[in-house]
Length: 152
Image (tube, rainbow, N blue to C red):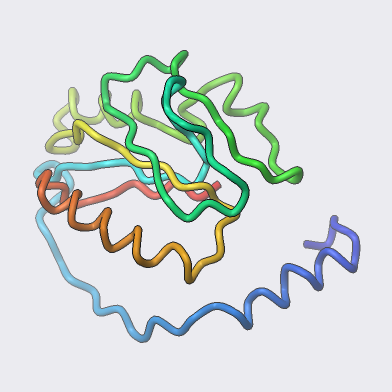
C-alpha cells in the first residue's frame, strides 16, 4: 500500500469498512489431502475462449472444464490496476491446474475436479454471495471437498 498514491490507498482502506461480518468460522478437520477432491476457484476473470467475457463489476462466475487447453483460456478482468503479464507467460500463475494434476499423479492429493470456476475479482462482495452459494452446491454435487482459492 505504501507504493500507491495516498488518495488510492484511502480508497482501498475505506472499502474494509464495507465488508460484512460473516461471524466466526469454525475449523472443521477433514480427510488428508491425499484423499481430497480439489477444484480451483479464481477471481482472475478467466473464461473459455468461446464463453462470454466478464462485464465490469460482474458477480457471476464461469465454469472452466478441466480439459480446457491453456491456450483456450482468456482473461477478461477489467481492472486497470491488474497486471496480466504473469498469466500471459504461465497460466499456472493464476490457474494452477497443471500443478494440481502433478500432485494427483504423485498421489499427494486424491483427485482433481472435472470443473473449475472463475469470478471477476472487482465485483462488490455482497453481490457475490448468491452465486457463491450456488457454486457451493455444484462443488458438493461433484464431490469436491477442498478448493484452491486463487485470489487475483
